[in-house]
Length: 51
Picture 1 (cartoon, helix red, strand yellow):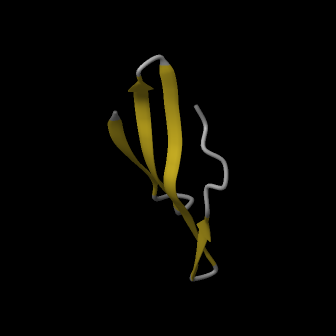
Picture 2 (tube, rainbow, N blue to C red):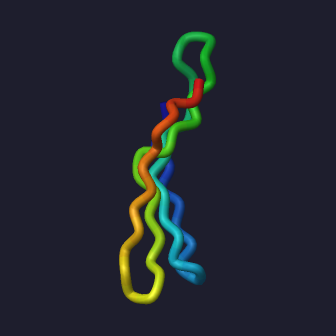
């Protein structure tokens, strides 16, 4: 499993992802996704686990 931090500082989009393999299952999971819009922080929960 690899942790990826994704920063788009031009558009103020940020993500913390887990990416990799668990046994034969591909993992691509957003742990934290946030945007900054009009000076406010918007958090987007990951409601579905992708395998």
